[in-house]
Amino acid sequence: MAISSDTSSPLVVVVGGTGNQGGSVIRHLISSDKSYRLRGLTRDVSKPAAQKLKKLGVEIVAVDISVGNESAVRNAFANADIIFAVTNFWEHLDKDREIAEGKVMVDAAKAVGVKLFIFSGLPSVSELSGGKYTRVVHWDSKAHITEYARSQLPTVVDVQGGFYMTNLSNSTIAPKTQDDGTYLWELQGDADAPLPYMDMASDYGLFVRYAIESPKYSKEGGTIHSYGQQISNAQAAAVLEKVRGITVKIVVLDPHTYRARMEQSGLPPILRASREDLVFVTEYGYYFGREFSDEQQIIRAGLAKRPRTFEEFLLANPDFLAA
Image 1 (cartoon, one colour):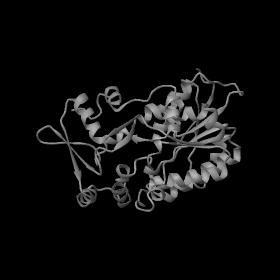
Image 2: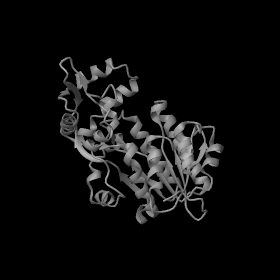
Image 3: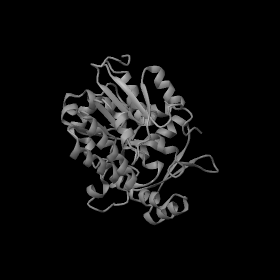
Image 4: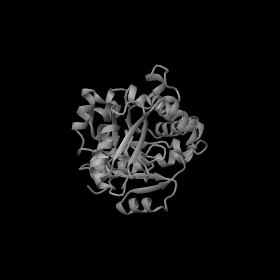
């Protein structure tokens, strides 16, 4: 349906409208059979992605969401019925800054009287692992923001994002080419443990659209665990072999060896520690098993379309991990 300018249609404000998650949200709301007014927030309105959205009828507003810029954030949120909010830990690698910027958005949402606040959060690994894993700070910080939002706002939905399929191109994660043309994929933990693989740019917005259009979640709030396919790294390697025609050998490293690899990676200490503790996903599950509940399966059945599998992602992106 075309984007509406009718003031009777709900105004959805999307933080990071040109990013992976925010862009996906906008695209899926545009494709809805329901009518929305859409406002995308970005720091640079001149970038091509912003101009493309503007041509589609999305209102594009420039704003820097930061501590000290609260008035501008409130103005960017003005008259919003629904807000989708996301933070960017990777920009600064600062847990406290991420929390502070999340609170800026929550406080602004409260000030404008938003009816529904949707946040891209994650579980608290420290809490749910019983204190065993305390260094996955960018998960704990998002959980802190969600908790704060629920203490301040009437209706909050935490739409948690699964494992980015695009992460497999990250140099510290990706399978690496060997001299004989095969690929070596060094992992930690259980290579057969299922993970919620997700084509974020394609499919994250499906789940946010569900949160907005579901009578239950739009009124009561809750948590939605998004993913495209539950697939283990071992199964993903087999899919890579099938689709790309390559040979992938998995080697599971012991904690000492994995730590040594991280020390050699050149990553900042906070990321090395976080990467080591991410082994929790093969012990407890990425969403600590909550994604398998009957409620979450009802959500998946109610999506506007089926999310992509890993194989479908590879076929749609022929240059990704191409031999």
